[in-house]
Image 1: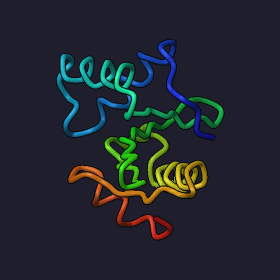
Image 2: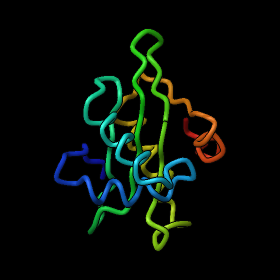
Image 3: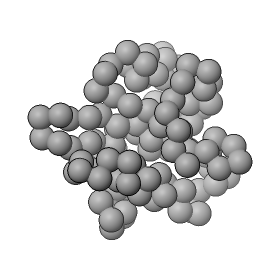
Length: 116
């Protein structure tokens, strides 16, 4: 289930974000988290089953009713089990009127999600 990011989940979110190729540096991670906390058009969601095992970050574009996936990450011990696809599907269900797009980093994964 997707849950909205809260400050209390900061360390978990930073850990999951660190699996993204563009987020290896600690200062870059801190900056990214701060952007999700302060920018209104950015939303960060965590995927919770028994524990929090995934993260998906999106940029909302009101002018063209699209939603761009900026970050998507799954704990390595839970990969290849469909968690990422379930996160994208839950996002689509949460925002049925939004067209889901991806950036250069997330596009290879999002293109595999045939329901987008």
